[in-house]
Amino acid sequence: MENTAILLIVITNIFLVIILGILTFIIFKLFKNQAQKIIPGEIDKYHPDIVSRMKEMKGAHLQQSNLFCPNHKEEPGEAPCAICDKLFCKSCIRPFKSLHFCKEHLQLIMHNEWEEVLTLKTSTQYPEEGVRLYESKKFLFEESQIPTYIETHYKINIDQDYIETYLVLFSIKENTEAVRSKLSE
Image (cartoon, rainbow, N blue to C red; front, side, top):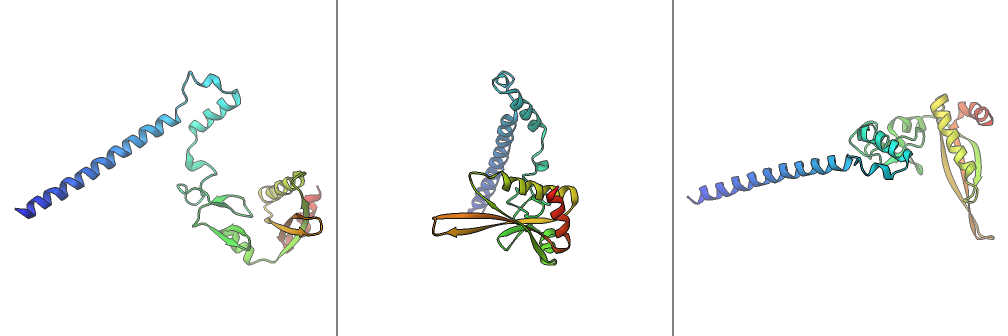
């Protein structure tokens, strides 16, 4: 008799947990769908560019966004690869030196001899040159399939009490001349 009562209590508890799980899932789906809707009367309050962006995002799937790991569509990107600039999840990105590399480009880093191509002194007052260097690096990889990476180096100037920042562009030794000619264009 006592065993039957305990069995009924356990079965009842399992049944309640299942029902609570189903209700939680339904409520989550309802709130998720409500958050994605654009209210027709409210849309007039926004700038036309924002409205068009909202409409674009309404049709976008999170898995297609570049904020998620290309290898694991359900995992958010944690860190960008220093060569391809794609965001990868924790299981796909590896630290090396002071940078992070995807599994594919980590092999490239480790099996090639890299050479400094350019050193650029930057400052917070004039960041444009640094931004251009990052854009050039991205262009080299996307348009010319030339892998490069940028390291940030710091130098403390004790006499004048400030920190100097340098961006150093590296390429595979065989590609150094091609990178220099592309950068001069």
